[in-house]
Image (cartoon, rainbow, N blue to C red; front, top):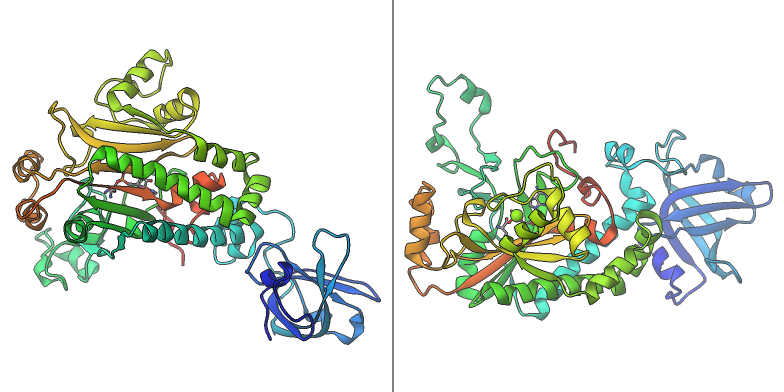
Length: 459
Ligand code: 4AD
Ligand code: MG
């Protein structure tokens, strides 16, 4: 019977005889009377040590680093060692050979190098840990909302609008681009397209989530979103996963309570259910990560208004590269000062100027700001953007007109404000940024298996 290495090392298997293990070879050491092979099967970080007491009877010559093998044998207890079990091999079959030129060496490779070979990097310790962590934290997200009785909804990937109005939509068409290029009119005739209209990949599931919240109450999406922005930074990807809850009968203040609770519960989950991964990050990626996570669970997030944030920045006496004045979009240097120097913990900034935020946000009574909230954290910057939505039909319509939006296109979005409209709020948490925050990994390209960034679409 096949066993996973995780179960063997955790001592949860019930038989120590006739055990079968399958995995990939990490190391091999052969001497005359004894040989050792370490294998990993992806179930956990640690390798299982295979001991071969009669090396001449095994096909060891053909077993190289990277090969996949099947080992039959029994599990032995070893006293006084860090890893207190090993496997004595009775039979080894090679499943898939690996030539000696296997690119992953025993030494540590740089993350830059590993990005070039993303098809193999999951076989390294770091990326094994990152990917298992990603899987666990995905589960944590669903677990949180399931326990709060939120409904998980699927919003479309192919959409016709631009939810954020930021002009960062990847176009989707079945039309032949080569033919279009020769079209002299210069305009694309989408009526010939499979969808019959201009479409793109979703930048956010929010607008559809609002429709569903208007029927189901509390909902959330968790799926891929796409941004055709040419920002080549360590925090931006063209394809990233976003968690977007949307709550009916909920205002900004109530949502801010949920945001803080959500983050703290995710962090608690990480400490308890992903202890192996956190231990690894703490040791190899960022010393002190565990303490940072614990502190965040205990901390009260700072809550300030945008106007207060500007005030703090202006009084800081710092000569920022991007000058500070009321109305600017907070730049990363400003976020860093607020989270890392001033508050030294996560902060929630609310009530932003309406002109730097999306059309759907609810206008405050001052006519200058909207009920938006961003959550900013040390090291990563913005991890959450959210708002109370404009639920008043006339207000939303006139704001859209002001922004010269095509009302026809968004007729459905306006229409739910006509029939039983309710105050509602929602936010988006960038899943990769959450993972960066928890792990201490410095580049978004290293917390998603196959990153999509400008100029990078291998695989
Ligand atoms: O602030 P954003 O653009 O907000 C929205 O899309 C809203 N419609 C969400 C909502 O209210 N339902 O994006 C939300 C979060 C950001 O705070 C950030 O964490 C992440 O998504 N994000 C990105 N992550 C990686 N790469 C990018 N290019 C990102 N753009 C946004
Ligand atoms: Mg934002």
